[in-house]
Length: 525
Image (cartoon, rainbow, N blue to C red; front, side):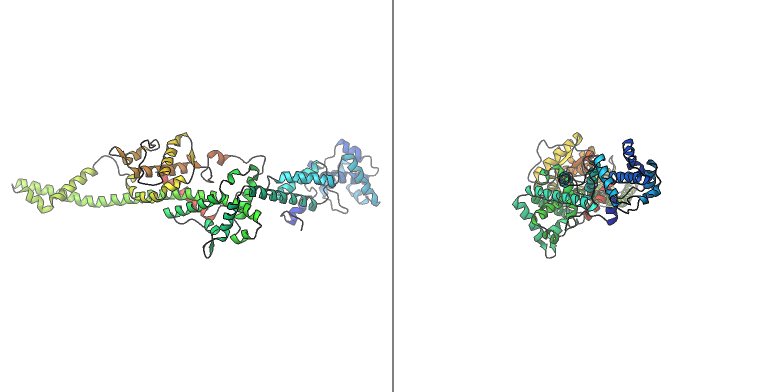
């Protein structure tokens, strides 16, 4: 079966339809002085009108005027006015069968129109194949091919012929792209892709399905699972995506959209070259999705730690207020007992001991002095219990991505490199020249204690500052779709290539996008 382009019948018929609006008629069917001179060589009004009609139809839409074809009234009237003929005389034309063909022969010789012969067909085929390299939509190529034929005055024999030319060119470009992508993959990589389709995580889930599964709830275990998936994807595709030529970007995006709809069984039914090419595109897109999921999960962990610290602080303040009233009442009773004992010249110690033990009174005094110190309760002081979550996964997260940023965040990037290099091993001390320039003033009282650095708070400060920088756009990851440099987010589409549809975002990535928006308001405290 010849290749076709996906179109409805209405869309297909509209490609070579005659102009039906005044704007189209004025644009395409205006006759110049040379055209009118050729028309006036005809003897009768009906032959002048028919000559002009066939000439205009060859120019736009670029095909022959069919015998008995119904002409739009606005087109017929416009052309008849130009040749100074009554539109009704068209019914008198071609009483002799050869007249129509004689006029066509004269028009083609005088105005340079050519039929689609073999040399021209080969030339158009080569041109269409070059154009198809950077396209993913066959209808775009079909439109360009029709415009090419009109500008070159090549008569379009029928839409099916042009459609087959465009579809064949798209198919050839697709095969060439598959071969070019396959050349970047080594046999072990192809084998690993096949294992992803055949291996089972458990009886009812393939490893590919596991890679696509939604992320779990906010937690270190969920982040670790996302990083496990990302490592598997990266180990499978290697550096092949980075070595892809730029002209394959749109076709890779199209393959990724197709691959997002295929099951493991559907992939296994493809031939090997196409399966590996589509798998590579799918896994490359999945790596970006998993990157966004990991970054958003990390921000969620920071946001949750902040909320828990706030809750603990509020509970502590509430408990202190309740205990403070009892403490103040006890101190007031002690003072009354002391005053009474002094006035009655009795034993002060015995009078005080009746109210409360001396150790309790001493503790009350210490707590009151500590409460009256200048400053206000700080959420950061309640973050220490959250360190165990980041100790499990923080260093691995930092070492999993290449964070980038401007000059202002270079101290933060240096701290990320140090903590990622240590790998969460508490037996390895922080280096003597550990970066400190990224620390904000509010963290200083917790990070610097007794002329030393509290490692737990240093790591927490780095994680929190990184989460804020990701939310504000100060730090980005080049392989992310959400956390990208601002100039890439705002960059317009290249004029050389048409804008392509955006790949669909998997369900769990949509959830992480909402989490990111929520974190922007929660992290900047």
